[in-house]
Image 1 (tube, rainbow, N blue to C red):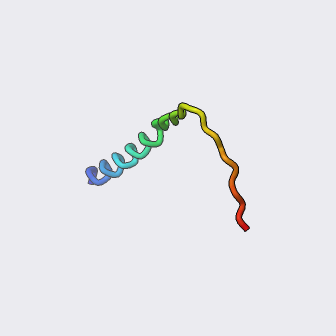
Image 2: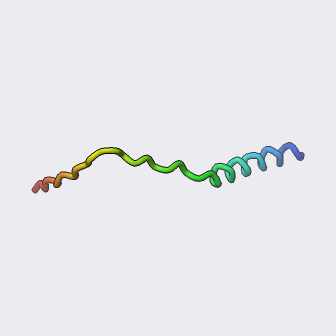
Image 3: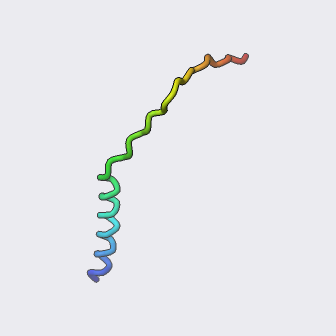
Length: 42
């Protein structure tokens, strides 16, 4: 009976651990970027 609950607790703790880890910071792109105007159709 305890093995059943042990498995469920492992799943819960694995999910909590995943939620607690901070996301990796986004890398900034190097260089010069130009945003061109969009052409309106119609």
